Length: 367
Image (cartoon, rainbow, N blue to C red; front, side, top):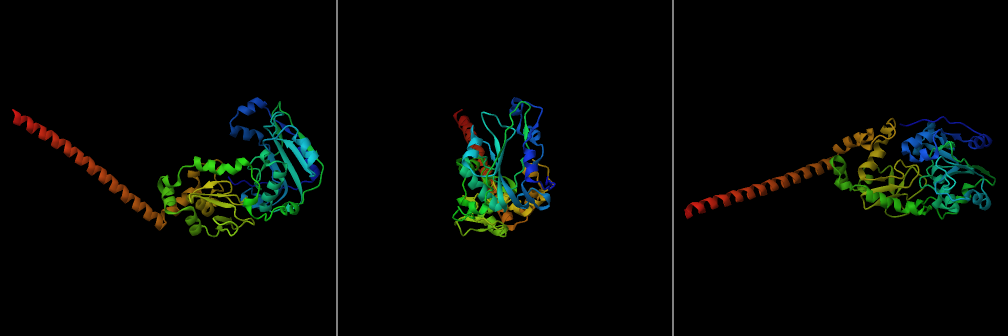
């Protein structure tokens, strides 16, 4: 479901005051730990915020106009990390613990304030550089999305809540961006060791796009990823001049963030791209960009095969002449194989009958 959020202006003082107090929930830490993720999400959903401006209050990737602060989720925190932040970094920050936090395994949210608003693409470059300064392995790999909703504080009934306001200077985004040779080049942005291997892991988990049944498989066997992009969505992606073999996401300021793997999959690192962070085959990358808007009213968690965009893409693929040719050719090849198999079986059955008949004749001759 495409939710709309109420946009509210808050002073720095009011915002920090809101963060300084947590909402204690009914369950214990042990009970929360054993709950399925969906139930955990419901409990910690006490409202949230996106520090920035949204088009029409819509928190979609392409609806973020600007961000006024950096929010980073430290899921792999170390004991004493807050003291280190205060001691070694001259940045105006607020730090508070999230619902899964324990003293032994700190889970913290860090908010870093800026001297000016940043665009969604600038946000990705700035947030990753600052995370790299602190220690990028400490942070959740999806925390750099500018459209990411951050929950207000909540804590289990017997949990520990931590809050710290750290004095320092607001961070100048231009100074951070100047540390890149070219911040527009997404391939130069820092990533964790986990994220550098995540795509390869996803490729191993994904089914072979060419072996999929029905129209999905037929479309993927008809068009490679690059052929599908070049033919159907040339207004979305263009071949990158920065790095050969990559694509730029045209609406973005950044470049070379779309990577093609074996011409079977595509993975976008552009923060404002609806495909960002998803390993897509040819069918799905065209589906999301041509028909993704149809999913705006779909319930959250709807299976991909039941989304309106999926039905629209199936209709689109079934009307494509090249896909029709692929399906016709494959049906013909299957028919030939089945006929050949039947012929072989008939021949073997006939041979068995002939052998039995010869045996009977031989027996009669002997008598």
